[in-house]
Structures are given as structure tokens and as C-alpha cells.
Amino acid sequence: MLFYVKCEVKQHYMALPEEMYEMQLKTLEYIFENKKSGRIVAGGTLAGKRGFIVIVNVESIEEFDEFCFAIPLFNLYEVELDPITSIENRRKLFENLKKESTMYTP
Image 1 (tube, rainbow, N blue to C red):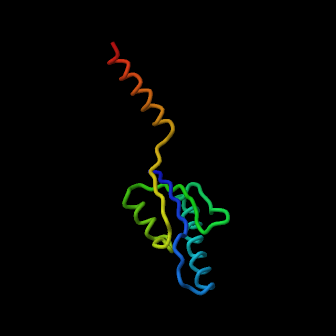
Image 2 (image 1 turned 30 degrees about the vertical axis):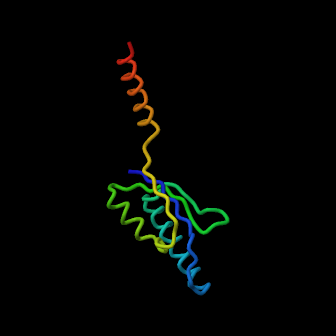
Image 3 (image 1 turned 60 degrees about the vertical axis):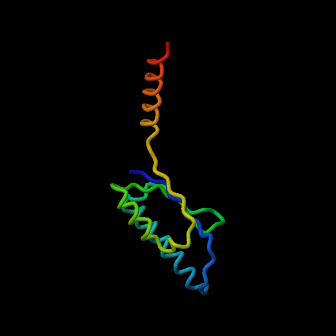
């Protein structure tokens, strides 16, 4: 299962600069480790912003949930999450819908 994940810091949090940088580094390390393991198949950081976009490959929705809540600073991010289907499957879907719709046309 593939998911699109966009995380961007929207809330300001009270921390010393050293603590803030440490948490940002922990988040980047988490992303790097998951990319290295193959769980993250694509992505990168948002230029000029504190955030990132990744495509995550997981076996279950539970695994995806665990991935998200393990992200350092997750509770401070504004998060967008979307499941992704393949272009091939979408094409097949529309081909089938087209065939079905012509069956009911007089």
C-alpha cells in the first residue's frame, strides 16, 4: 500500500534553538532510516519550509499508522495523508466503467 504524506510545521513551539535543531535532526534521521529500509520510496524536504513530503510503502493501515506516529514532532505538523493507487489500475477502472456504460446505452 502506498501513501502520500506531507508534513509541515505550522505550530510554533517553545524550545531553545539547540533543542529545535535536535528535533529537526531526529525527524530527518527517521526519514533517512525509513528511506534506507525501503519503507519510504520517494520524497524530500520542502525548500524554504520546515517540512517534508514522502511516499510510504507499507503492508497495512496499522503499519502506516505506526509509521506516522513515530515521526518526531508529528503532533506539531500539519499533515496531509492520501492513499495512492497505480495509474495502471485507474486506467483499467475507467476502461471497465466505459464498457459498462455502453452496455446500458440504447
